[in-house]
Image 1 (spheres, rainbow, N blue to C red):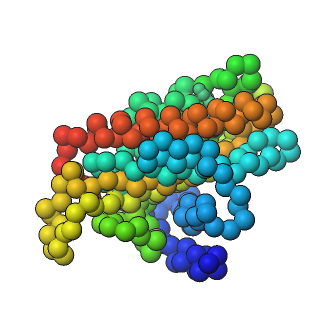
Image 2 (cartoon, protein in one colour; image 1 turned 90 degrees about the vertical axis):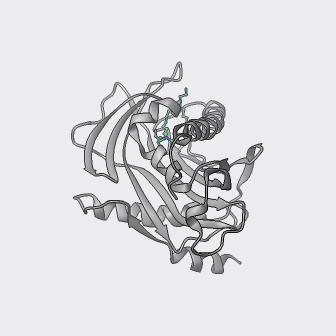
Length: 262
Ligand code: 16C
């Protein structure tokens, strides 16, 4: 089935959420183009050797053990289903810097280096130090967009949304010996599932009680320097699980009093 899946994923196209184009548009297009396909590659297919690392209700976390030059760079993928909000609302919440510290457990502080457009922002983040290793920092571009032609799960309504975070260099933050520069490629893809039959043209009758958000999250993080493999693997599994639980409950609370935006 592998060639068929590849052909389907090849058709995925991303559309900017707001635009306009900016100086990093070609870089964003390149990353989002590749990563949107990678996120949808099923963990069950191919010779990827994905292992189920954690399961809790609707949440499943997979990892593929991988080391580069002795550094653990295990690719992670996760799926989750969150009741009462749409794909757009979840992606918007993940993208929104103003609420990031409510759910992001790995970050000590961050600042905006460049606001390229409403849908593309460059950040510098200082991560919490894992004693006794050196503190990590990241510099990455975060982009929110809509995906067209993505594989649709059963009972999906509306569009597929994605936030893609990818490391880049920025002249205002040179690498110093004080911190280790970690790198990341992250994709959060969301799709809205409806739990009842809706006739065409009746979409305006859909309420919060009718929908859930299906999440696919993928992360390729390179800690940037050696740390004991068992420590990296324990922290990665713990943090991705905490992240999915925390962002789900925070996003549910944040949209509760608002009208549903599909
Ligand atoms: O995607 C997430 N958050 C986004 C917005 O912040 C963004 C961030 C990605 C996380 C990149 C992690 C870089 C290394 C951090 C150093 C470890 C700090 C741990 C502190 C624990 C109290 O895209 C949600 C992120 C969810 C977490 C993903 C898995 C992280 C793997 C961590 C590898 C551990 C390395 C430890 C080295 C000593």
